[in-house]
Image (cartoon, rainbow, N blue to C red; front, side):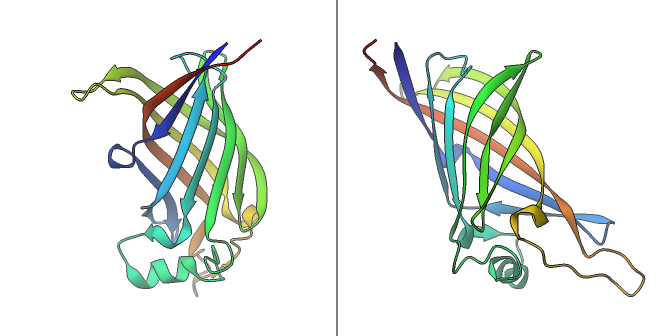
Length: 181
């Protein structure tokens, strides 16, 4: 059986998250440094295994003080937990693609299920084969030890527990490996 390795093209990909602030607006953040790969038996990616990691120090919410707070022990604790990681598999469930696997933050691992919109496979002008994905899902930050919490005088939550993950990923085909039966 032949498997193909694909790696994330960071110049054509982004990893972001959105969280409600004061319940009235949304703050968007990005991980600027990340890497990942997939191994698949076909260009449909059914059953592909996926691995991914993001550098916590690369968090960017366009506000330095907030970024530093997110990197602190109140949230990600970047000094002691420099990466978040994911390993899983792409599956089709009722005709829809899902990415199901283990997400680890702050040494806490939980299984997550993310929705996948597979954009297909295409060649670029440089002879490379690319595959595109839009991946979305929600996690509860407190389940991963990101437990900082505050309430306003009026009783509003400052930061929601629910965090939306949004990844726009382009993969580059690397090589095909034939495995012996």
